[in-house]
Length: 189
Image 1: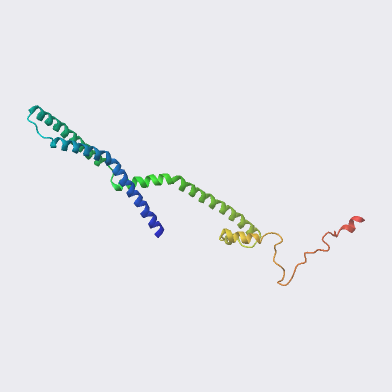
Image 2: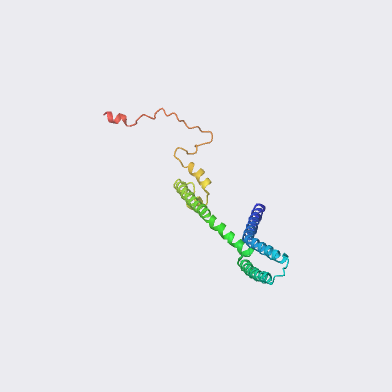
């Protein structure tokens, strides 16, 4: 559980970091425009007033134009703030994107599990048939075995693998009469 908790914390940290980066990237151009507008406003205010009234009117026109720019920037800032997703919706979007990317992998894993389970069940069914045919167990008991148990028990069903007649009795594998035909004397007549 601690590994899963640590992985979940890492994923949450990554999502929060991604959110901060996106917010900073979206705000960077807006901040640069605001800084430029403020510099222009400060530069126009710092200018010394002249006695020429035409220049004052020009400064007033510039001030009005600058005010219009600031108002436009303020409106765009408000619109951008309204369009920035909350951290909750952003986290949901990231989680959905990650799950969509992992879906083919998880589907392949699930398909592999299903295929392996079907293959193991088919193999187990073959061993169960062999065990039942050899009368080692009844069908119900044989179906309760797992694959490894059934495999080991089915190996004992092979011909030539019968148990000895008695514990100390050794079978004679050297058959002196193995190639002798009992009926050979009948054919001669």
